[in-house]
Image (cartoon, rainbow, N blue to C red):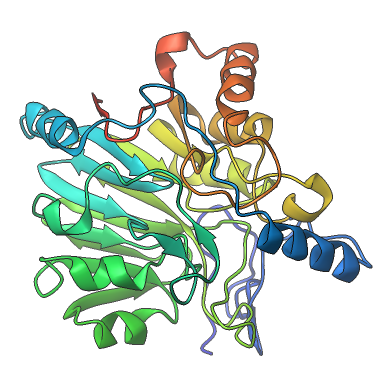
Length: 337
């Protein structure tokens, strides 16, 4: 790997390899949480419980809008800046006249094949084949609930859109028929038709086979166009790097943060924020508004799947966010920026 100068917001000395690059792949920023020593058996027990628990949670009324309503809501934005939640961390983001699609897990299973992994318990807001035209696709990492191969194969625009991915994921996207693919390292940017996409640090990991742990990079994204700046978090734990991101790139008009998949806490702290930590990230980023995502779609962990919203609202209020600035959407709902 080539040596690189220090990116904004870091203390990496010029002429040295970036901290997060290793001989075997990548690692998280300094000060990030890690799973405790001796966590093999607790993790094995957790995975066994997840394998055995095939319950389908019952969503509350109004949690998912009919697809026709979701499509009409997106059209009602009239091309103005806004977001449409498709479920989990998949969004249609309108920014600067372009439509950005984030981490589109719209298939039935978050796993390598049907019946493997976790099954979504609600439909997506809009099915992949019915999505409006997409200009830019951003993928934060290669986990199955973020990089969904059936969804990526179903996107009608894959031959013309710009796909932005972290280091190492370009070849996979090209094999899936994406002709215009840009790989980014943390703090790397690409500009496309007035939209600037910058990969920012996140605290997570990557793997699809069990034998490729951390071989490809993971990231958050800074998306800027038309005088607005949005942070899309992908998956992440909480650490001091978000204060650095806020200093380097903030303030933000909107921070999209994960609020679910956090129990058992000792195991999940290193990869997912709980609702309170998610709000801390938004404050560190100096975000005017915060939107909770990564909940209410697929059962990945052991908390009640509909617990995160209440904790998120309480944490946002305690942090000084007005109710209108702490967003929780129905799946399929659109909201203007």
